[in-house]
Length: 184
Image (tube, rainbow, N blue to C red; front, top):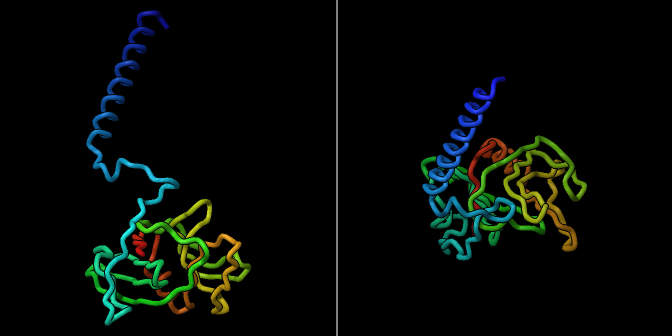
């Protein structure tokens, strides 16, 4: 290649890199502050307040638990609500949490498995995963035999057990990308 061609290629490459750098700067400058902050393990920032409850109706969807289609999971109440696009509760049920809770915030279903063996050695089905805490995967599942785990406090487990019937409802509702809102 003649030296003049090499100079042109070098000049075009330098101009392209400057352009890409400038566009990256513009893009980063226009990111809303809430999206520009990173969180450990890709988790949302902690929400410290507890969503208000209707004490007369303990199964009612907590006020301030989001809008639109979503799964709402209360770590304090060990309860799940499946909420449709119209903000109507399609189903609510109690769950048995593992020993590791997700940080309150907004997540998305990242993976699903029809059947696997749980960390406690129990065959489980309809696993819907949405978070991770210190290397522990957090997700909803149902034991094939219908049992709930007896948590060993020394083991780190992120399985949130539901009944088989509730597990079927969760499986149908919470596909990949479905929003999961974790509250206190």
